[in-house]
Amino acid sequence: MHPALFGTMAALLVASALSVILQRSPIRSALSLVVTLFLLAVVFLFLDAQLLAALQVIVYAGAVMVLFLFVIMLLNLQEDRPAMAKVAVRGAAAFIASLFVLAAVRFIVGGAPSTGTTAMSTAVSADFGSTEAVATLLFTRFLLAFEVTGVLLLVAIVGAVVLAKRRLV
Amino acid sequence: MSPVSVEPYLILSAILFAIGAVGVVLRRNIIVMFMSIELMLNAVNLTFVALARHLQAAEGQVAVFFVMTVAAAEAAVGLAIIIAAFRNRETVNADELNWLRW
Image 1 (cartoon, each protein chain N blue to C red):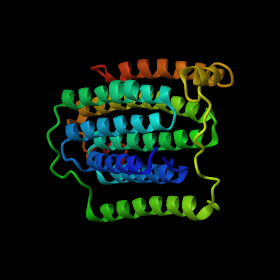
Image 2 (image 1 turned 60 degrees about the vertical axis):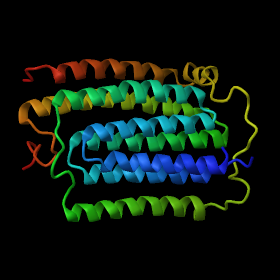
Image 3 (image 1 turned 30 degrees about the vertical axis):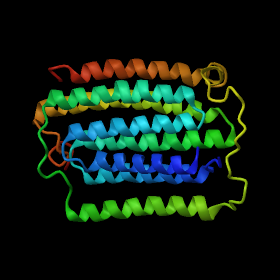
């Protein structure tokens, strides 16, 4: 990805992510999250992950976010007046955030000798990230995990239906 | 065209993760806290995809596939719990959902 293009995408991503946590109305948070997920799908495309970009849009920006919006509208939430936590908690949050970013920057920039080796190679095999390449791995080396995932989804469906039923216990 | 190396992606991912973590701590609306968790999961996905591309290893993309599946399951069950909690307490404020507090 071209540096200027990456900078634009990164700025948009950070802005929309901040919008998710700073909007007072949950609906606006959810819509900001949709924007964030779409932007991430674009970044995935630039990283040669075509299948994952498509899945990101279909599963995340599609199914999961529709679920979120549906629940927000179902509960008919008003804007929460004390939307933010107490001042002490805010300080803790700022501390956590700076810790994460500093640790990451220190680890990534200062930790490893970053001369040439970290530059991403432009040459990548033609089918890297294609549905076929990922699916081949999925159905050979990760077959057991794939099957377990199916069971997990079944359990999640049944669990969600039971939990959301009107009379619980 | 000079391609971007892998570090900017990792830093961007760390920033997104930090924003998600702050959202969980800062916001009291459990739905927004939940969305912040999704944000953190996506930040990790970005790390996986960037490193998969960097190391030319499609295994990273398979990992993202599994993360997405678990996230979808988690969203379904979590939102069902939120609906059940809202039926009982008429609130989605995390400070008021304190059945388990001693």
